[in-house]
Length: 333
Image (cartoon, rainbow, N blue to C red; front, top):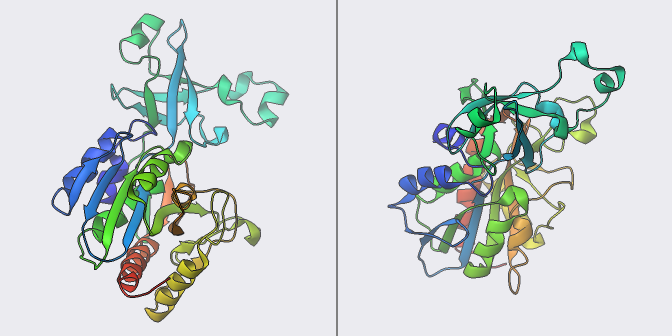
């Protein structure tokens, strides 16, 4: 399932391909509908609490802003991307499926300042092999989207792919929908999370959940020298956020998640950092408010073509999410 999801194209605002993959998987698992912004919502009716699970379909990428006379394509980032990782990366365009390379001046021609300073994204371009603007326009137009071209690789304990943030959350929601709970459950595959939590804002306003969980892929830097920069560690279980840039977890819900993890001997970790955010930031503010928390899979090299997760972290995130839902059938917050 993860291979299908990560192979699909889905830059923010252009999630159709991912949505179709998910729609085919969930079509018989509940009432399926798509709202005006493009969120895919699966409702499993029940008599219990109204609970919303959210995972975003979109990934970071690029949008075409201009085409030079010599056929080079200028672009802007969609979502947060470090320009230092972009040089020589392969990309693919969503509409035409044409492939290209992100180019820059070769090192032989760079002056001392260019060699020692971070590259400016405005100086980069996409090369599709066109030699003129007219030739490039046969394949690419202003406003077209592109994303990294990267294949899914099973590395034993790890999985490498693009867009594990947050196709890993989408995979969890699909598996959750295969079970039945005494809850009025909404699983929402959201759009445009990477550009401002937009899909979750609309969905939460409509659903008005009592309780919500954002299932995410989150920052992991457990390979650096200074442990203060780890934030999360692979292989140590799902990460629970206490606070980030967009929300503070509901204290009672967070304590319940920890209690469930410990009672079921599911490894977990607290996210050591407050930078970043996810759909919880929009959901907890909907209308009169919602008790909200996040359960995340630590993801190395996030927002790049080679993000990596530990298989056991994914499996334990799924296990913990299911057990929390079972607990919410009875527990009062």
